[in-house]
Length: 402
Ligand code: HSE
Image 1 (cartoon, protein in one colour):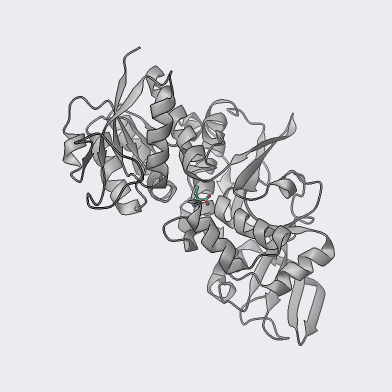
Image 2 (cartoon, helix red, strand yellow):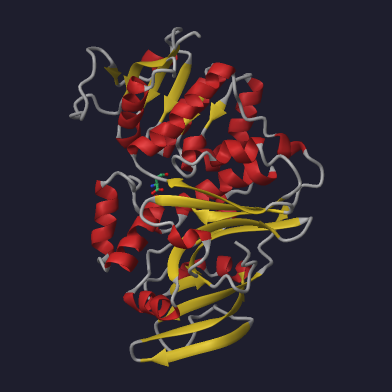
């Protein structure tokens, strides 16, 4: 088997992991020839052979010996420039940059087709869990009903530390950063954007439909308080940040990211720390569950390694489902049952429940539970982002089948 010569872009947490994993993988038949970094002056955790590092993209892109580019830079704009240029030159790419991929998927698919090359990105969603390739290859039928789960390791780590270990939120977040789970800007993790980007990527491989990230409601755990945690404890449930894409009927589907009260017995109830868990529900098989480390240097590198070895067989995503007739259409016209903590006895301006089933108004906090439309949550996102407010999905009402 011919050895693949890899040009690596990015040598942070994930890049270092790839270097280690490739160095010890005996059957990968691939070696890193050059690494392009933002700063040559930065001290590196690993000693590299002389001349391995460069700060010029052209040293890799112009090198005719390079067969494959692996791109794991943490800046979405830089990632876009590298990946699109490589694809235009017909060089296959493996990338882990979910923000870049989710924002530019239609263009990236077109570039692959036009230049007869491949972009693989299993590492972009759920770290070590092979969710994308499985959705692309195995679930190629009409049976798929729902993909739902914990897609962000950092927020799950924070919630686990706070819930199960009584740690304080800020300390848990700092630990998630130290352990290399969090994004360079951790607000992407805790505000739900990282889960959102992963969900957009999952949706195109699950249903063959691209939905722009800005059209999807994504709400994170940034405003969670002790009051909300106490409420969940009293009810005997945990709070998890959950992303889901759900077929509502043959013609329509919805997707959103929101914290959720998760009852014991649910698969994702026991998904703790930086682990991710994905429930796939379908017509003939009910539920399947994929579980694994969703963040961190080596788990993410293992997924990159799998994409690298897939290139030995010229593997590429075919996006077959995008050409199916009768694909479902995205809608946010759906009613959810939610818990909303708000600062005073009145609901925040603009927030209108279709039906209220429970209210608690007291000096130590106020909340309302009831039915509300997803469309109205999207329209009032700015209000919900206020630190005095926290929103949490109660899944008993909305397809609680996982
Ligand atoms: N920041 C991401 C997470 C890294 O915490 O899940 C893996 O995508």
